[in-house]
Image (cartoon, rainbow, N blue to C red; front, side):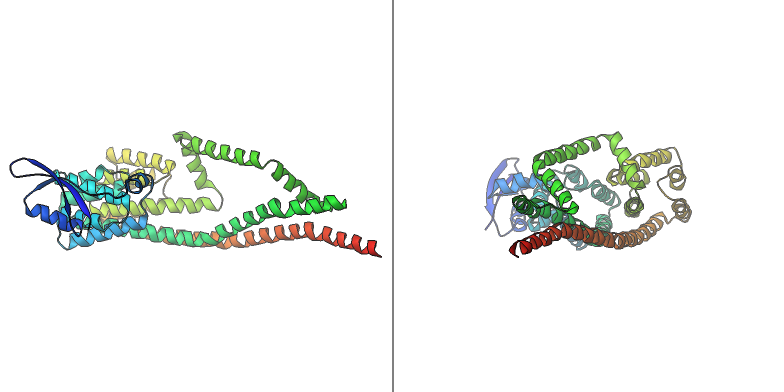
Amino acid sequence: MPEYIYKARLANGQILQDAISAQNRHDALQYLLGKNYTIVDFREQSTNVLTQDIFARWTKINEKTMLSFVKKFTFLIHSGIPVYHCVSILSEQMKDNKLKTSLNNILQQLNNGESLSEALQKHPKTFSPMFINMVKVGEQSGNIEQALVGMRDFMEKEIDFKAKLKSAMTYPTFMLFVSIAVIVVMFSFVFPRFIDIFDQIGMKTPAATQIMINVSNFFSENFGKIVFLAAITFFGIKTALARPDVRLQYDRFKSKMPIMGPLIEKLMLVRVTRTLAILLKTGVPLIEALTITRDIAGNKSVYKQMETVIQGIKEGEKLSAALRRTNMFPSFIADSITIGEKGGILPSVLGDLANQFDVEVSERAERISSLVEPIMIIFLGLMMVFIAMAVIVPMFNMAGNIHQGSM
């Protein structure tokens, strides 16, 4: 039976610190609240501090784990259970150590009189700004359930969208890694053995074989330098991208790349329109919704343009007018938003746009996949033919020499 450590304030003001054993967290809390204790601190006795605290600090909570948490939270709230008890029950059920620790801390903060959104704000690495602000609006409107439903819908669509995109790009990525693996194996293990055989026989090697031998020798003699140079290049690029000006240029370059550029732009449009739609539908004010969307876009170019839009809204412009002054959206999007503003259906229009872009992204990703697959197959086939010629031709020459020598 698990043991729970608690600190509570008694009716006379005295602080009591003790431990209690119970079947689960909910039963322990119910027992203490039944004694009219004001709980100041409450946590499960940890049996493995290293795995619970150290590793939880460095691991990221899986999207599906967070979606499961939001779904359960929504169900409990819909059932009429108070927020404090919802968090208590969820804390007991969650297996993710980082999320469990955050929920335990939130329980203490709720016990100290803080609101749920205030408690969530103290855990920015666990809960996204979008989730925190939606809960805040839900508290202000008295409808946290609507906020949780909006977050649940958003996360479900995001996960489904990423899954479709990942599925479309899986085969080309697999073919790329297979090609690299084959080349590495051939140059690292196969050709060095043939080089030794050819050297011992002293036979003249064909041009294709000599090219392979030269490349193999280069990699084997400079392997350490190549790895070091690759590592330096990787960390150099990562350091450079940490600079805002470099990141801005890089993000702009990504959207202009052939083939992948239009896909990246569509991905950005899906994320921006969907996030805005959910936030506005939940009741988040426009400027705050734009700020959250700007922060989670993950693109410095979008960030700068969203700042321009936010500034325009602050100066009294409508969203459609502010968007027209940027090159972030195609003109038909601003036209659609204008209709949404006039009809009072802006969240619905943004949601429809997000669904439309979602379909376009899936179609474009499939087209890229269908284009890349034959290219990779042809490349891998040509590489195999070249390697085979470099190996088979000298083997035939060797067999011919042996046959002539035996006659």
